[in-house]
Image (tube, rainbow, N blue to C red):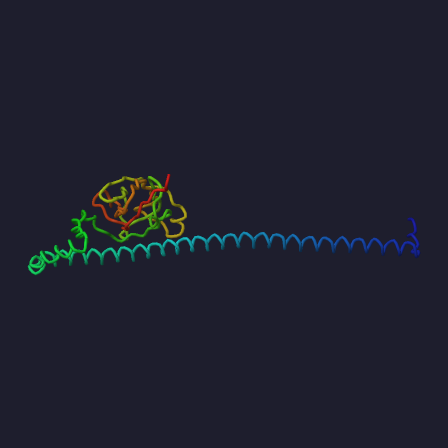
Length: 241
């Protein structure tokens, strides 16, 4: 059996140097692990930030659509008040006192050069009955239409859960049939399964002639009656050529 090597100062120094190298590699490994953990954490934080920004953008988009809808509702209320005033004016014109003073007004008009206002137009065709829906419109109808046509996309189902079997847009009495039963997996994931409407998406393309028109987005319920999802007045102003 060979005797052990003598412990000399040189061997002690070599062992100390080897131990220092091992400690250095261990420290470098720990620093590398910490850096990798931080890097992964930063990436996760970045993805989380992107997700939050995407959610905030969607929320602002929906809020802007709601603001536009409110604006349209206010304009429609103003139109209703104007229509009521026109109806009251028509009632006054049909009264005996109005007919009695007609010669005086005619003479005043001739002297002042003022044209007589036109009589109010007749009532439009009554829209279909409305109903309660859970819905969202990806492409908002609350806008000024600039192109010759527009595609309304979204998803919807009735509050009572019955299936939607067809969709259409009624634009001033003209009907445009759309497509329904389109997939909306994010909506199902958020609101839960809808047995009557497992694919609640839809899209309807309709023409947008110049002028102001009443619009009604309508759904046929379980192959039966049509019901209005949303109504509004739209303004179509084509771009200048």
